[in-house]
Amino acid sequence: AQKITQTQPGMFVQEKEAVTLDCTYDTSDPSYGLFWYKQPSSGEMIFLIYQGSYDQQNATEGRYSLNFQKARKSANLVISASQLGDSAMYFCAMREGDAGGTSYGKLTFGQGTILTVHP
Amino acid sequence: AAGVIQSPRHLIKEKRETATLKCYPIPRHDTVYWYQQGPGQDPQFLISFYEKMQSDKGSIPDRFSAQQFSDYHSELNMSSLELGDSALYFCASSLQGLSYNEQFFGPGTRLTVL
Image (tube, each protein chain N blue to C red):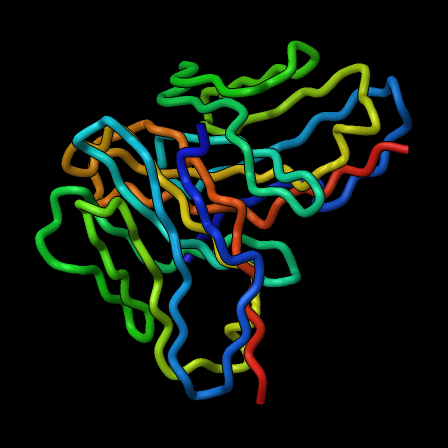
């Protein structure tokens, strides 16, 4: 069964507008971490934001925020004030077995969403 | 700040040849991960090492082997290469005990098997 599901193969947004990229996950582990990575066409993987399963508040990092709905097992990425440089592939990933930052756990990635920002 | 270094960045091999990919983690990082990303695919976990010992193993073919050395650099050895091995290979490193133990990815090695 797919552990991380990103149902939007592609998304389009106008520059300066906000966009939400969807991510749902499936795990029976009570301790897990959720990550978002950006992969530009050049190929590198850039870490954006992290949410731990026990975190009470939604994570925010600059223009990025994570809409974490634990009961629905969703961890959507919200990018505010989109910029042309935000055009890239975005991956949601999960690490199971998180326990206060101590985990050797591998990342399991979703299929990715290609975001295109129009001027 | 120092980042994860991978070499070579690009590699072209023929079928049935061997390849060695190298990864130099961020200094003081104690865990190394290898991922394979096929064309248009999401990265798939291959193997990881913590303090030079294998800590987890994913869908790594038997033709592949990896190790982490005393200086913490890691090598992924790939033998009897197949066309399907063409992919972007990422190495990532992390330090246990940090606030959320982020994995820092290297730039990747793009392997093309002809």
